[in-house]
Image (cartoon, rainbow, N blue to C red; front, side, top):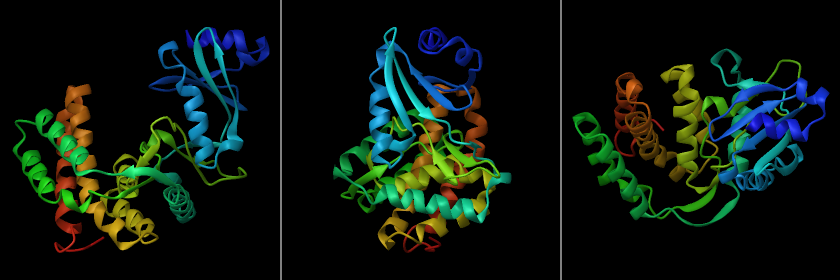
Length: 280
């Protein structure tokens, strides 16, 4: 269906060059110069929403247009000359660019505050899906006790989906930005500490736990102390979110995720919570 929409949009020579890039909520293709993100009809409005959020993030120059073809929304952008995050391509220059990118996003105000009610609701949802896992329940108990640390924070503009597939690193010799975040449809107002936690668990962890923490803490030094302290709440919470996702969406992968993520969550809380080591 997505391919059919692009067939009606592109000239034959452009259509012949199309290469699929995957995608979850939408199907993504490139002709080498442009990227076409095709949303199915019931989500066609998300193409324009993503374009607006890219502009909010300072990436409006990448947006070439939004069109509707056969009821499907198509976001057309310039192709960024990069590849998804891999440890081998990660350099000090990458880290500096990441720090600049996230800090520039998190300077943008968004309406409202993070409420205690929404945090407790999230914890309750995870507690339900992770029933029967005593270690996870204990971690949730500890986070409930400390929820006031994260409640009442003014929202800032956040990407909220910085896993390795959405974090592109510039190819050697290419011009322009060092890093690029794609898939902005989930972006919006949130706590910058949560955005940094998602970056760690979704991308930086591929470096190994020691290197991931070092990279995270180097970025976090650009932020006020209270943001750094909230990482001790949000990093474990994000691992629990990952486990919740596996338990409900990919049960076959849950045992391995449990072995990998739960010890990291418990360790980070122990090492980094204010008054409990303060490694952050």
